[in-house]
Each structure stands twice: as C-alpha cells, then as structure tokens.
Length: 112
Image (cartoon, rainbow, N blue to C red):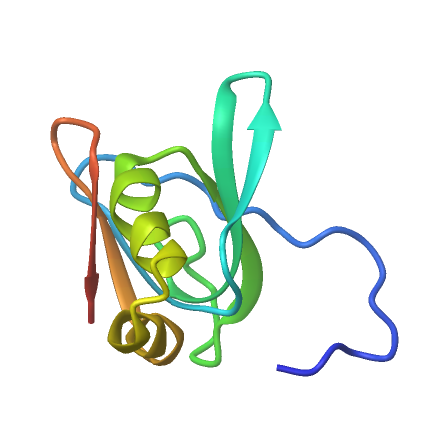
C-alpha cells in the first residue's frame, strides 16, 4: 500500500469488542510494540470491513489502527512474524481475518 501524498490527523483506533461480537479486517503492516500506561501493547494498521461499533461502514471498509495487549497477538502472532515463518507471513498479509471476543474476555483470531 503506498503512502498518500497528504495525510492529516490521526488514524481512528478500532473500538473494542464485547463477548460474542466479531470484526473482520486485513492487516496492512506488522505490529509495532508500544509502552502504554497499562503496560506493553501492540499497534497495527488494519483495513476494517465489519465491526458492530461501525454499523454505517461501507462495503469498502476503512483503514484504522488496532491497539491490543491480547495474548492472541502477543503469544501467537508476533512470535510467528519474528520467526519469519514464510507461509504465515504470506497468509498474514493476504488473508481477511475475523476477530471474535469470547465470553471469558479473550480474543480469537482466525482467517475468514
């Protein structure tokens, strides 16, 4: 994805999901580790297609940031990316992903 000539303002951060809710998106870049007042988290650019907090989202979706400390990112995704697992890196970049909030507060991520 090429950078636009002009880009003003801050990207929208994706709202969190509550139990039973789902969102679909594509990753646009690699996660970046950041320190927050709540500890270490990751932030990654995504292209969001569906999310219950954005009912008027067009079928084209919209770019935004996902900031998370979820174990699915910390323990599952980041280690595979750091290992440079070629198949996973290709799939990470090409797949549309579905994120689901579970009843216990955890997040489940799978290709859609």
